[in-house]
Length: 568
Image (cartoon, rainbow, N blue to C red):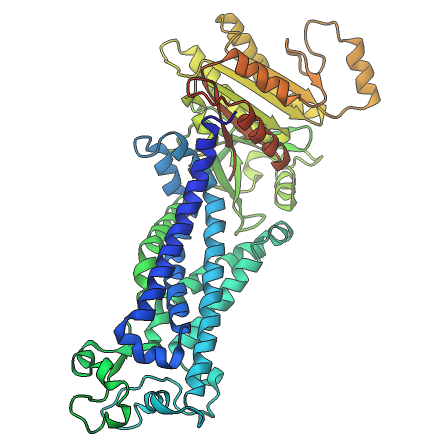
């Protein structure tokens, strides 16, 4: 049972294959152009096929450098997401995979850069060897061009004993090539998950070496080391007739000495647009950084969770969006993403932050949430906020049926959604495409339910008052408890409300049986498009993807599950 789920996954595959296809097309087309182009015939005599390898990989390198900044332009992604006319349905879901595409393009840059560097090492060695005494015939004649007046050189290595590395580092192409290579190695090695977890500031600093990378790339081609025959020379010097008469180039009128020049640099043409776009992105971020953020409320919850209520002039949001938060008192470099937990109808925006690393632990301590009294409002550290940005959860209202699944602190994105549902249900005139919501929350610590239970209780009460108890079905699963808790739960099991949450819906203990859950949902909505939204660990994400695939109907008229994962 595959159904439209394959379409959703297939689009990701189509996008990847399209990217690979364009890379292969550019590489093969440029490779054969340099293998057959008449103006580079004499260059191929010296360099052979490594000329084509170097130039084809350079073109693909330029193409991928053009793409690399686009997926991390968050404001652009949010704008495209908001333009439903241009980005609908399954295509819209691909925007949530922007960071994966960014990494994919980075691998493309690394591969093509490696090919380019290796090919040019061979080219340099061939240039050097063609100046040696062993070089004979046309090869030697071409390498000696440029030794007399009115001749242009083809071989940049002028003498055989010359140290190629020293000579290379005297050129623009050599110096910028070295800088580009070192910058790429720094960026790639510091981007590993281990480095990001161990030292985010190291990751941030080395990643911003991309500025040096792009500047060097833009001027790299100005060295014009690889040279080809000029068009004027081709019109006077017939290669087919003259290549075997190299000894007569100086004397025969039909074979004047060929003239050579380097190609115009083109890398800057590829990267100028994306660099300008990303510069605008950073200007917007700096402008937002300067805007004042007023912290109106600070709440310390159990399980080391900090709730912050904030206000900012002109701030507008939608359910499921996230913001980037920076605290200069902790680090002037680090920006961390947090999902908004407030509804658009509220006059503030809020986030819930759990201590899950050095930065978040430091933030909780700075706000006095680590066992000490909360700070007075005027003593709170300054926060900067960038965003909001779109995320997968904003599409919840686009389905007639939505299944929302959260694990642990992954419940925070759904807080804003449930609040927004509460407000929309209160507004009788608001038409909703969404007619049914299934909400699952799997949590290890019973105390973590406390801050979220009030929201569910108010929502449960409101739905009951308006006769819409069918609209929301929620299921809470507790996966961790001790013996005392088990005894307490057993003693109060027969009460009307749950002993942990105070809700009418009783808490389940253990993990959900996803086969049973999806089977029941598919049975209850036999001809519906169902959006599945998840925020939590990768292992459970893979399980849910499998369930979506398994329970989607092959019949276009049947039930179809569309999987969406919250990611930053």
